[in-house]
Length: 309
Ligand code: CP
Image 1 (cartoon, rainbow, N blue to C red):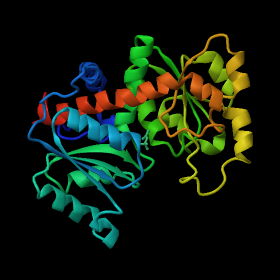
Image 2: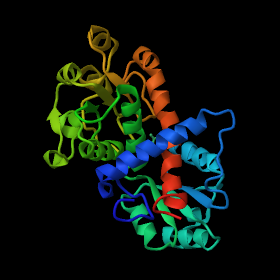
Image 3: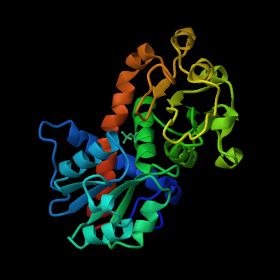
C-alpha cells in the first residue's frame, strides 16, 4: 500500500487517499460482520499465516477472524510452538513458511523493522501487526475508523493522546495517521515518557491532563508499558494516576465529555479508573469490532482487490 502495493508495513508509507480508501472499504466489511452469515468468498483459495512472536489478544484474534470471514485458509504460528524456539532465524522461518505456498504473512515482532526485513526474504505480502516501538498501522486505521464512525469526520478533530508515548507504536502510528487526515494531535505525558525529538512528530505537547480534557474531542489513553520501561520513568504509578489518569473525579467534573478510546490491554486503576472504563466500554469494544473490519479491508486490498492479487 502507498508506494508498495504488496505490503502494509507502516502508516508512514501511506497517503491520505490510501487511508480514506481503506476506511471506506472497512465500512463495507463491517456490514458483512453484522450479517447472520458473516462470511464472503473474497479470498477463497488464499492462505494467510499469522506469525505472532510477541503476545497479543486483540490483533492476533482479529486478523484470524478477518481472514476467515474472507474465506481464506489461516495458519497460526508462535515462538513457543515453532522451531524459532530452537534458534531458527526469522529469515529461515519466513522462507520455510512461504515455500508452502502462502500468500500473506501477518507478523508481530519485538524488533522495529522486522516486517520490512521479512519483505526482503519472502515472495508474498507482509502485514505489520506491531513491530517493537516502531508502528502498529492496523491499530491506527481501526482507531480512525472508530473516530469517524462515532464523530462523523476526521478533518479538524482534536485528539489528545495520553501516556507512554515514547514506547508506544500505537501512538506513533496514530500521530502519523491523524496528521495525514487533517486532525490535530496533542500529546499528554511527563517529559520522561516522551521521545527525545518529540517536536519532530508534528504534534503539540502538554504536561497538563486538565488542559487536554478541556480541549479534546477524543481522549486516547495508553497503558504504561511495564515490559518495555527498563528503568523507572516516574516516581510511582500512584503519582502517574494522579497527574495523568482519567480518574473518577476528573471524569465527573467534565461538562463536555470526550470520546474515550484505548487500544488495550487496559490497566484499570492506572491510566483509567475502573468505573470510568465501564462507562466508556462500548467505545473500547467498538474499537475491537472495528479491528476485524479494518483487517478484512487490508487483507482484501493486498490479496484480492484493487492493487493486490
Ligand atoms: N491493541 C493491541 O495491539 O492489542 P493486543 O496486543 O492484544 O493485540
